Length: 279
Image 1 (cartoon, rainbow, N blue to C red):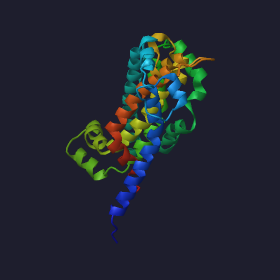
Image 2: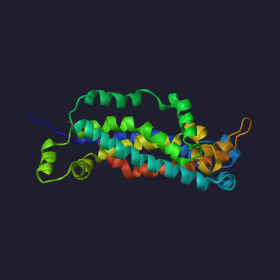
Image 3: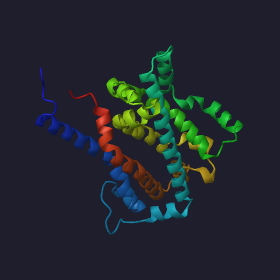
Image 4: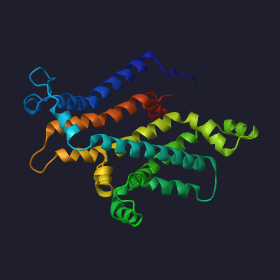
């Protein structure tokens, strides 16, 4: 029995759903961006209108660039996010390959143990993590954030990637072994290229919580030289007065890396999410 995998009706429906989701998801982003270019009065008077000659203002961006070192904050966020992503993808893919490829006593228990990190938030161990970082002299360093975010992202990475790696053909891997390829070459040259959609999925879902996180930068790296862009934006939020122009400008700048990452990985991301859903 054979069925059509991609009929015109299914394609039109899929594109319509994707367009609707994109509009809904991007609406808050658009509101933030257009209000970042308006004066304070215009923000509260007409938040949904586009900036015009009367309401247009760059005061928010000027404040962001003058007050605080936002270039340094962006640099810290980029370094922490990129290094953490690299370590999560590398170690997560290696652990997933070992769990899916090799059969050993405790394989299932090891997989369940790694998956516990998805169900138990890492923030519950904040006090213990802070004590470890103090004992290791890593407080107010980017290394502390990288270690925490790597540990935070590994459970989800192992969980997703192991399921994809089980679908890689055993015949392909055995052919590589017959040709004399080592296990490392089989992993890097044969398996990883076939699970790129899953890698992109893990990258996006790992990157966003790291980039937007406020908790661990506030606890582990609150010093001026190690602040992230999310923590740096808090200087414009006061107990009694908030500089909304600067806050919206900072958020608009902070959105850029997420959008760039989405544009880079969008095709692989959609393939990774929908893999196996359409038969």
